[in-house]
Length: 160
Image (tube, rainbow, N blue to C red; front, side, top):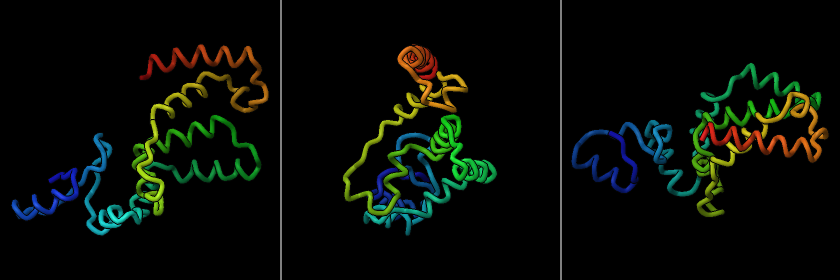
């Protein structure tokens, strides 16, 4: 059984006598996750749910790729292609707003809304750059920025 509203979950369980197996933390299919009563309680009380964040990260991130990026960071060779890779892996974890809700202490900032379309926009900008521009952003003069802006628009209209 999948329950979206926490308060209703107890009533439905009591009436049906069936255990709750999954809970929806959002409106998308990717927002359905295995139900853990202790974790849900922590979320409701505003204490976060780091175990779920860790599980999502383990599913989304490639350990070998992470080690390569760590070496690049140590050598200060991290470029926009690497950033794009990280961005795409973050997207696999679900919406940024849902991830923020699971981090302890984030509830004191209120209901933080992050527009995930902004990540598509950033991806489009990076994809519109040449390899050299991604490796050295100091190359980005006015004419290159204009070219990127035009390409970004085409990218965004194709991949909405």
